[in-house]
Image (tube, rainbow, N blue to C red; front, top):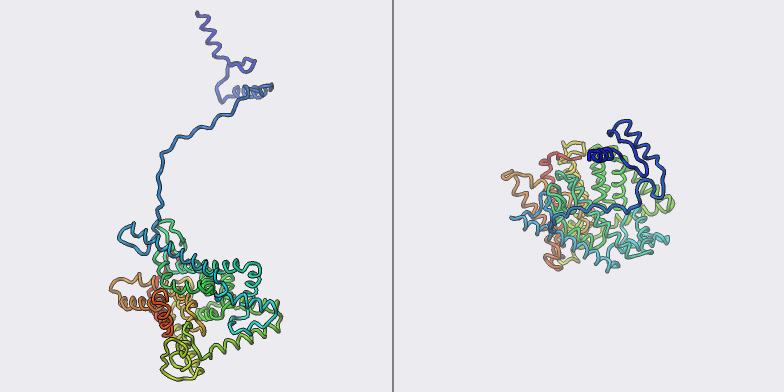
Length: 508
């Protein structure tokens, strides 16, 4: 028995490898262990491919079953939501309703514009482009009041319409919708804390979203104007976005890109060229220089390379004649809500003769009204310069953002032709006013009359739409220059709130 036990113990201390019996393995980590491992690797490979026989691969280890997690579709409430109701559930329902209405209206207007593309204002752009492509006179048509650079854009739209008219309209309307969202993002970046992290859908209770107060309230304030712009397929939202983008790029010292954006806006439509006056007033010479350089490139160098110097000179002469004729046009139709048209309806016999309401209080000649308009515009410019005095030349100052917003609203007023859709620029002073009014403490001097001006302006601009008062009353109110009045009230209110602006933590 002792011998058998010794044999068993000695056998346990030996390792059988294949057909060879190895010696007792040393402890791991020593030199003898490495030598033994080397001998194992050097064994000849037979039918069993070395050590052991072929076998199926090991089955993957089954993971332990996890407890089921039940989740529901819960809309995140972003920071500073509007409206903030008594309970979280009610606020969530209101937020979901706003999203639903905005998306449904955008989709409905987009589908409607595709169904009646030939009746949109946009339809004149491809027609103008066909005239350009055929070598005709683009200013022989009465509807063309665009500067010469827009002829290139019209030609591009005409070429796109030859391939797919519906696709070109869809791309144009999609660009307009994206420009509206881009405008809201840029305004939030200028007037709201944390505005640079704005998203459309709410992602976190600590971040701003579309339904945050500083974003959705200015949008609702001017929603009637944005809807009118989308209904007619106009370019105004894109021009507003380019102008605001230029200012933000200038603030970030990206001068070349900012000058290109502002020059493009001023080349597509002449009115944004007035914003160059603000750069000159602030003595931002480098920004002004880059903008002028791109204006020369877009309006002279590129057109001359395409059409030749003679045709370009003729186009500029024709456009100047069209612009001058538009100024002295005696009839001021009710959709035209520019300040000049309001003066014509008030002071001339022919100004409001074709409108639903004619209330002329004088019989001035049209040329005298035009001179009065230039005088009023000059005085308004001097008033803005006086109101902007003492502010910083640094465009990163939030007050400079407020001044630029005021300029955006004022430039549409002094345009000789400004339909309701052109006043989408009022969203900029509306964002400024809403941001400043919310920060006014209770009992602050002038708080109540400022809120009164806010609601009066909202009533003139939005509540005068046909969706609220009907088509007939909307035309009557436009005959009374109701949008012009609302714009004047809003711009004046924004001017009064400029001194209250304080530097934002993330202003850049």
